[in-house]
Image 1 (cartoon, rainbow over the protein chains, first blue to last red):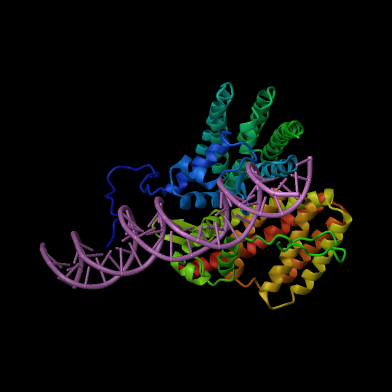
Image 2: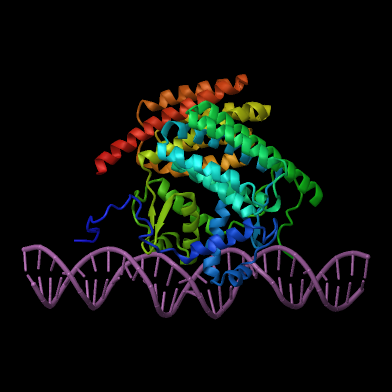
Amino acid sequence: MDDRVVKPSAAFEHDFKVARLAAPLRHSVVDSIRNAIAVGRFKVGERLPERGLCEMTGVSRTLVREALRQLESEGLITVVPHRGPVVAGVTPEQAEGIYQVRAQLEGLACELFVAKATDAMRKALKDAYKQLKSAMMSNDPSIRVNAKNRFYQCLIEGAGNEALGQTLHLLNSRITVLRATSLQVPGRVKVSLRELNDLVEALMAGDGPAARAAAVHHVAMAAEAAIDILRREQAAGA
Amino acid sequence: MDDRVVKPSAAFEHDFKVARLAAPLRHSVVDSIRNAIAVGRFKVGERLPERGLCEMTGVSRTLVREALRQLESEGLITVVPHRGPVVAGVTPEQAEGIYQVRAQLEGLACELFVAKATDAMRKALKDAYKQLKSAMMSNDPSIRVNAKNRFYQCLIEGAGNEALGQTLHLLNSRITVLRATSLQVPGRVKVSLRELNDLVEALMAGDGPAARAAAVHHVAMAAEAAIDILRREQAAGA
DNA sequence: CCGATATGACTGTCATACAATCCTACGAAA
DNA sequence: TTTCGTAGGATTGTATGACAGTCATATCGG
């Protein structure tokens, strides 16, 4: 009566993705704009006229506007009535709030990971951490960001909580703008790695509370660094 | 030459909002659809053809589509390519995840409230709690929901963390669908009020950890009830 | 130098159009 | 009768053009 009769020939290993590639153009548009903001092509506070975006992306105003709606609810841009979209900035106070939330959620992620992750996921996380270590030596920021994203992805996946993943993703995209404008504090990389090392060790040891504490601590440190930069930036900009 | 010449007669008390009511029509559209989903006018899984929404809202497809994009990133609907939007359901697993996140965040909110809320805010929260108590006697679900929302709004405001507020709001709208389809478990109301009472008392006493614990417990209980309902519903529907 | 106005840029919203795709139902073949 | 294929309708995906309302700026007259 319908398809799905794929003869059970070989042993597909559970994945089988890419079956449906019906990516609406609009997704590319969102990605494109989001990326442009992330890499700092648009500065905070800069206006983004729809027509300019049309030219830049090569699509019609319809699609640009739909993309803008999505970016708006992601908090990447704010749309002022009759003036249009501008790249959303982050005040130090907002950043503090975001990092507070992140700390809680990453703490939760750690505990869930300890409780629910399979051995394969533990291994994946360990590998991701190793890669992260070497990636941190690189000078290319995008490599470092990618490695860190992969690491977190492993963590989240192991935690097996969809809402948690989505929420963290949202918060992160909100502060992506920070990463772009500020190349991390110099000394921070090594300290950060040490913190993550503690975290991974606690995770591997199956010590949930310790892992949570390590995560909270790590985020708190990152917050301090980021807020510091923000304050300095703001002082300079004002 | 134009309006806005409101003669400065009386003393406006500090608020003065609604001065600029440049509410884009599109916001109303979003509210309208969101509300329609919340009150259960559309069932979970039901398709929402754009044209139907145009008729219902009386606006053009452009606006409907932009509204859909926002609702999509809020997680209220999912859009399948070439089929269009359907009301997003919540599986028991997803609900569990959402409630886990909520527990953490409401716990955080409590601690922040203790640390930062002003006396006025404490009073406002107490009042909101009193109103909540009497509202819970009502049979009209919308009254109860409103009262609860006001209570949470006070809590969040006192916590003074924007991102926290937004995140919780998002999570709540995601499970609003639950409230619509299921009139709470009968006995739950009283127990719930008792839990909230503990919470408020801890807040007023300035005991952050206790307040957090109360919040986590409250959410955990609510989660249990909600997931239970979901499971039963799913069993019946399948 | 200052204020009023004209002008342009941009958003907010609509109507229309057409291709691509999905679903369904009907009809043809085995 | 069952299966298969296909035609047609429904719906989305995307583009275009249009126009009113509004904001910002430049211009012009005092």
